[in-house]
Length: 260
Ligand code: ADP
Ligand code: MG
Image (cartoon, rainbow, N blue to C red):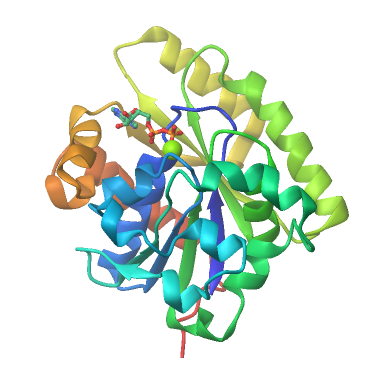
């Protein structure tokens, strides 16, 4: 199972929207996908229509070792897509983990057990911080998918993220790669968007995906219906963009293999 963390410490840049819709696109293409909701806000869980009552075993329990991966995985309305849901309990984990053994490796250890062969790829939806939850995701991950909103301060937060990645590489996970940076909420009519996108491409080069995710109201409506945009309206510009992004992402994962 290949593991990709969707990370950016800024909130509201499209992490969860990207995690849900890339996961759905990959499942639609035929891969068996596990989505781990690692944000105490539980937006990925809500966006996939998982009610609170179905989150009794969740990512907090997984991190604190109270349940195994098998025990906290639940199915979704999307065939081949399963999720480890999150509840607000997870907000305590950031502090509780500090005193725990192997505090940076708890997610990695939990995800790399026997049952990992049930899935081809795992996506982790990170919270908007660079605390222990995101560090757990970066230690567990083979690579990172970084959504970047095309706005004026987009690149500022990025240097902090890159520093954290360097630190994780040096101490815990030397192989951690940046799979790609995805430009989100792209608005062609806005000159600033175009300018920021150009600057980002000049600065980061090929690591930026060619596909850009447009600002599209369908993408923001879908979560309130508890379904991914790709199911809510598979022909809207946002859904088409996420499908294209998933294909581009697959092309960057030549080692991805169907699990036995
Ligand atoms: P994050 O997980 O980084 O906090 P979200 O994916 O939750 O970001 O997105 C923040 C808000 O913006 C949400 O309300 C979401 O529905 C909306 N949104 C995300 N991407 C788009 C987009 N491309 N077009 C329009 N709205 C979007
Ligand atoms: Mg989110």
